[in-house]
Length: 88
Image 1 (cartoon, helix red, strand yellow):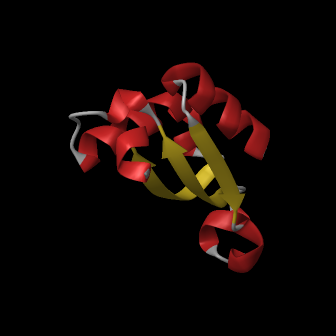
Image 2 (cartoon, rainbow, N blue to C red):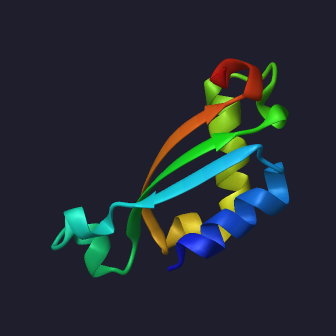
Image 3 (cartoon, helix red, strand yellow):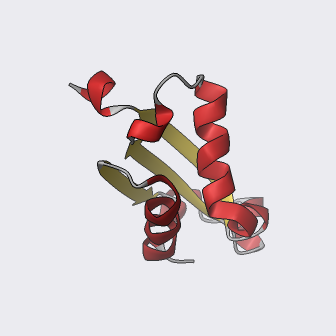
C-alpha cells in the first residue's frame, strides 16, 4: 500500500487544493487489520467539491475515490475534509 496511490486517487477524483496523507500504520503493529495487510491512514483534504456537502457526503466522496482500496489495503482511515474557504 502506497501513500502515493492514495494521493493519486484522491487527486484524480477531487482535484484538491491541499492534500496530506499520513501513514500511521507503524503505530498499529500487531493490530488485526495490519495482519491482513491493511494500513492505518489519516487524510487531510481541502477541496472545492466539498462546498455545500455534509460531513458524511464529504467522507463518501473520499471513499468513492479510494474505491476497492477500502476493502483490503486500508484498514482504518481518519479524514479531515474541508473547503478552501473553511481552511482560512
